Amino acid sequence: MESREIARRLEILRAEMPEGVELVAVSKFKPATEIMAAYEAGQRLFGESRVQELTEKIPLLPADIQWHFIGHLQTNKVRQLVGKVKLIESVDSEKLLKLIDSESRRAGVTSEVLLQVHVADEETKFGFSPEELYDFMAREGYRELTNTMITGMMAMATNTDDIVKVREDFSRAASIFRKIREELPRNPLTLEPLVAWRTLSMGMSGDWPIAVEEGANLIRVGSAIFGDR
Ligand SMILES: *Cc1c(COP(=O)(O)O)cnc(C)c1O
Image (cartoon, rainbow, N blue to C red; front, side, top):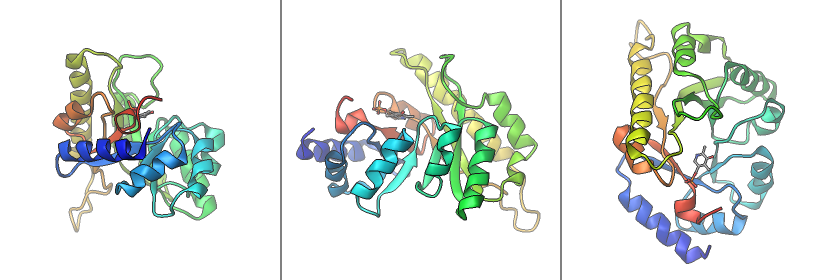
Protein backbone atom coordinates (compact mmCIF):
# COMPACT_ATOMS: atom_id res chain seq x y z
CA MET A 1 0.00 0.00 0.00
CA GLU A 2 1.05 3.57 -0.67
CA SER A 3 2.88 5.41 2.12
CA ARG A 4 0.39 8.25 2.17
CA GLU A 5 -2.51 5.86 2.58
CA ILE A 6 -0.77 4.06 5.48
CA ALA A 7 -0.18 7.42 7.20
CA ARG A 8 -3.79 8.44 6.63
CA ARG A 9 -5.18 5.18 8.04
CA LEU A 10 -2.92 5.44 11.08
CA GLU A 11 -4.08 8.98 11.74
CA ILE A 12 -7.75 7.96 11.59
CA LEU A 13 -7.12 4.98 13.86
CA ARG A 14 -5.29 7.08 16.44
CA ALA A 15 -8.09 9.65 16.44
CA GLU A 16 -10.61 6.89 17.20
CA MET A 17 -8.56 5.27 19.97
CA PRO A 18 -9.32 6.45 23.50
CA GLU A 19 -6.52 7.68 25.72
CA GLY A 20 -4.72 4.98 27.66
CA VAL A 21 -4.90 2.46 24.82
CA GLU A 22 -1.70 1.53 22.98
CA LEU A 23 -1.48 0.42 19.37
CA VAL A 24 0.63 -2.41 18.00
CA ALA A 25 0.83 -2.06 14.22
CA VAL A 26 0.82 -5.65 12.98
CA SER A 27 3.23 -5.74 10.05
CA LYS A 28 3.40 -9.48 9.32
CA PHE A 29 3.83 -10.28 5.63
CA LYS A 30 4.39 -6.57 4.92
CA PRO A 31 7.69 -5.31 3.51
CA ALA A 32 10.11 -3.01 5.35
CA THR A 33 9.15 -0.13 3.04
CA GLU A 34 5.56 -0.19 4.32
CA ILE A 35 6.73 -0.48 7.92
CA MET A 36 8.89 2.61 7.28
CA ALA A 37 5.81 4.49 6.07
CA ALA A 38 4.12 3.83 9.42
CA TYR A 39 7.34 4.68 11.26
CA GLU A 40 7.54 8.00 9.49
CA ALA A 41 3.94 8.64 10.51
CA GLY A 42 5.12 8.31 14.13
CA GLN A 43 4.42 4.63 14.84
CA ARG A 44 7.10 2.92 16.95
CA LEU A 45 5.39 -0.24 18.16
CA PHE A 46 5.08 -3.11 15.68
CA GLY A 47 3.93 -6.71 15.91
CA GLU A 48 5.16 -9.77 14.05
CA SER A 49 4.00 -13.36 14.26
CA ARG A 50 6.90 -15.35 12.82
CA VAL A 51 10.39 -15.50 14.26
CA GLN A 52 12.22 -15.80 10.96
CA GLU A 53 10.33 -12.91 9.37
CA LEU A 54 10.96 -10.76 12.44
CA THR A 55 14.68 -11.47 12.63
CA GLU A 56 15.03 -10.69 8.93
CA LYS A 57 13.22 -7.35 9.30
CA ILE A 58 14.92 -6.05 12.45
CA PRO A 59 18.26 -5.16 10.80
CA LEU A 60 16.47 -3.40 7.92
CA LEU A 61 14.60 -1.00 10.16
CA PRO A 62 15.34 1.77 12.71
CA ALA A 63 16.72 0.60 16.05
CA ASP A 64 14.14 2.55 18.07
CA ILE A 65 11.28 0.38 16.82
CA GLN A 66 9.80 -1.71 19.61
CA TRP A 67 8.73 -5.16 18.51
CA HIS A 68 6.05 -7.36 19.99
CA PHE A 69 5.91 -11.03 19.12
CA ILE A 70 2.25 -12.02 18.71
CA GLY A 71 2.22 -15.42 16.98
CA HIS A 72 2.40 -18.99 18.19
CA LEU A 73 5.99 -19.45 19.34
CA GLN A 74 7.51 -22.84 18.63
CA THR A 75 9.87 -24.09 21.29
CA ASN A 76 12.73 -24.50 18.79
CA LYS A 77 12.53 -20.75 17.94
CA VAL A 78 12.69 -19.38 21.47
CA ARG A 79 16.47 -19.03 21.52
CA GLN A 80 16.39 -16.91 18.35
CA LEU A 81 13.69 -14.64 19.75
CA VAL A 82 14.70 -13.77 23.32
CA GLY A 83 16.46 -10.45 23.65
CA LYS A 84 15.07 -9.17 20.35
CA VAL A 85 11.59 -8.04 21.37
CA LYS A 86 10.08 -5.73 23.96
CA LEU A 87 7.18 -8.07 24.70
CA ILE A 88 6.16 -11.62 23.82
CA GLU A 89 2.35 -11.42 23.85
CA SER A 90 1.58 -15.02 22.97
CA VAL A 91 2.89 -17.29 25.72
CA ASP A 92 0.38 -20.08 25.42
CA SER A 93 1.67 -22.78 27.79
CA GLU A 94 3.62 -23.15 30.99
CA LYS A 95 6.20 -25.21 29.15
CA LEU A 96 6.85 -22.33 26.75
CA LEU A 97 7.02 -19.87 29.63
CA LYS A 98 9.68 -21.94 31.39
CA LEU A 99 11.67 -22.26 28.20
CA ILE A 100 11.55 -18.50 27.59
CA ASP A 101 12.82 -18.06 31.14
CA SER A 102 15.71 -20.49 30.80
CA GLU A 103 16.74 -19.10 27.40
CA SER A 104 16.54 -15.55 28.77
CA ARG A 105 18.78 -16.54 31.68
CA ARG A 106 21.23 -18.12 29.29
CA ALA A 107 21.27 -14.96 27.15
CA GLY A 108 21.56 -12.69 30.18
CA VAL A 109 18.36 -10.78 29.42
CA THR A 110 14.97 -10.30 31.07
CA SER A 111 11.94 -11.08 28.92
CA GLU A 112 8.58 -9.42 29.37
CA VAL A 113 5.60 -11.59 28.44
CA LEU A 114 1.82 -11.78 28.37
CA LEU A 115 -0.01 -15.04 28.99
CA GLN A 116 -2.41 -15.91 26.18
CA VAL A 117 -5.77 -17.14 27.39
CA HIS A 118 -8.10 -19.14 25.20
CA VAL A 119 -11.69 -17.86 25.34
CA ALA A 120 -12.73 -18.31 21.68
CA ASP A 121 -14.83 -21.18 20.38
CA GLU A 122 -12.27 -22.48 17.89
CA GLU A 123 -10.56 -25.71 18.90
CA THR A 124 -7.39 -24.65 17.17
CA LYS A 125 -6.62 -21.45 19.04
CA PHE A 126 -3.64 -21.64 21.33
CA GLY A 127 -3.57 -20.50 24.91
CA PHE A 128 -4.02 -21.30 28.57
CA SER A 129 -7.58 -22.28 29.38
CA PRO A 130 -9.10 -19.94 31.99
CA GLU A 131 -8.79 -22.78 34.53
CA GLU A 132 -5.12 -23.36 33.74
CA LEU A 133 -4.42 -19.65 34.03
CA TYR A 134 -6.23 -19.30 37.37
CA ASP A 135 -4.40 -22.36 38.63
CA PHE A 136 -1.00 -21.05 37.54
CA MET A 137 -1.59 -17.65 39.17
CA ALA A 138 -3.11 -19.16 42.34
CA ARG A 139 -0.11 -21.40 42.95
CA GLU A 140 2.17 -18.45 42.14
CA GLY A 141 3.94 -20.36 39.38
CA TYR A 142 5.71 -17.14 38.37
CA ARG A 143 7.84 -17.27 41.52
CA GLU A 144 10.05 -19.86 39.82
CA LEU A 145 10.93 -17.45 37.03
CA THR A 146 14.23 -15.62 37.31
CA ASN A 147 14.45 -13.78 33.97
CA THR A 148 10.84 -13.35 32.90
CA MET A 149 8.29 -10.74 33.92
CA ILE A 150 4.64 -11.48 33.32
CA THR A 151 2.81 -8.18 32.83
CA GLY A 152 -0.66 -9.26 31.73
CA MET A 153 -2.78 -11.22 29.35
CA MET A 154 -3.57 -11.54 25.66
CA ALA A 155 -6.79 -12.90 24.19
CA MET A 156 -8.54 -13.32 20.87
CA ALA A 157 -12.27 -13.51 20.23
CA THR A 158 -13.96 -16.14 18.11
CA ASN A 159 -13.52 -15.39 14.42
CA THR A 160 -17.15 -14.59 13.60
CA ASP A 161 -19.35 -11.75 12.32
CA ASP A 162 -21.57 -12.24 15.35
CA ILE A 163 -20.61 -9.21 17.42
CA VAL A 164 -22.62 -10.44 20.37
CA LYS A 165 -20.35 -13.49 20.54
CA VAL A 166 -17.22 -11.38 20.04
CA ARG A 167 -18.24 -9.10 22.90
CA GLU A 168 -18.96 -12.11 25.10
CA ASP A 169 -15.46 -13.48 24.49
CA PHE A 170 -13.77 -10.15 25.25
CA SER A 171 -15.95 -9.61 28.29
CA ARG A 172 -15.01 -13.03 29.61
CA ALA A 173 -11.31 -12.41 29.05
CA ALA A 174 -11.56 -9.00 30.75
CA SER A 175 -13.26 -10.49 33.77
CA ILE A 176 -10.49 -13.11 34.05
CA PHE A 177 -7.94 -10.30 33.83
CA ARG A 178 -9.63 -8.31 36.61
CA LYS A 179 -10.15 -11.31 38.84
CA ILE A 180 -6.47 -12.24 38.63
CA ARG A 181 -5.49 -8.64 39.36
CA GLU A 182 -7.70 -8.54 42.44
CA GLU A 183 -6.28 -11.77 43.79
CA LEU A 184 -2.59 -11.10 43.27
CA PRO A 185 -0.52 -11.45 46.43
CA ARG A 186 0.96 -8.22 47.72
CA ASN A 187 4.20 -7.26 49.33
CA PRO A 188 3.27 -7.05 53.02
CA LEU A 189 5.25 -3.84 53.52
CA THR A 190 4.46 -1.80 50.43
CA LEU A 191 1.14 -3.49 49.54
CA GLU A 192 2.35 -3.49 45.95
CA PRO A 193 1.18 -6.52 43.95
CA LEU A 194 3.99 -9.05 43.38
CA VAL A 195 3.21 -9.10 39.66
CA ALA A 196 2.76 -5.93 37.56
CA TRP A 197 -0.44 -7.28 36.00
CA ARG A 198 -1.27 -4.25 33.85
CA THR A 199 -1.67 -5.12 30.17
CA LEU A 200 -4.77 -6.57 28.53
CA SER A 201 -4.08 -7.09 24.82
CA MET A 202 -7.28 -7.70 22.85
CA GLY A 203 -8.72 -6.49 19.58
CA MET A 204 -7.68 -6.59 15.92
CA SER A 205 -8.79 -4.62 12.84
CA GLY A 206 -12.33 -5.96 12.83
CA ASP A 207 -13.11 -5.95 16.51
CA TRP A 208 -10.83 -3.58 18.42
CA PRO A 209 -13.53 -1.02 19.35
CA ILE A 210 -15.48 -3.78 21.13
CA ALA A 211 -12.30 -5.01 22.84
CA VAL A 212 -11.52 -1.51 24.09
CA GLU A 213 -15.07 -1.06 25.39
CA GLU A 214 -14.60 -4.28 27.33
CA GLY A 215 -11.31 -3.11 28.85
CA ALA A 216 -8.39 -3.76 26.47
CA ASN A 217 -5.48 -1.34 26.85
CA LEU A 218 -3.37 -2.75 24.01
CA ILE A 219 -4.73 -3.47 20.54
CA ARG A 220 -3.07 -5.31 17.64
CA VAL A 221 -4.14 -3.89 14.29
CA GLY A 222 -2.78 -5.02 10.92
CA SER A 223 -5.02 -4.90 7.86
CA ALA A 224 -6.82 -1.69 8.91
CA ILE A 225 -3.40 0.03 8.62
CA PHE A 226 -1.53 -1.89 5.92
CA GLY A 227 -4.39 -3.35 3.86
CA ASP A 228 -5.20 -7.00 3.25
CA ARG A 229 -2.48 -9.59 3.45
C1 LIG B 1 -2.49 -10.99 12.36
C2 LIG B 1 -2.81 -10.76 13.79
C3 LIG B 1 -3.42 -9.57 14.21
C4 LIG B 1 -3.85 -8.47 13.27
O1 LIG B 1 -4.96 -8.86 12.52
P1 LIG B 1 -5.74 -7.83 11.57
O2 LIG B 1 -7.07 -8.44 11.41
O3 LIG B 1 -4.96 -7.74 10.31
O4 LIG B 1 -5.79 -6.52 12.30
C5 LIG B 1 -3.63 -9.42 15.56
N1 LIG B 1 -3.28 -10.37 16.46
C6 LIG B 1 -2.69 -11.52 16.09
C7 LIG B 1 -2.35 -12.52 17.13
C8 LIG B 1 -2.46 -11.76 14.74
O5 LIG B 1 -1.88 -12.90 14.38
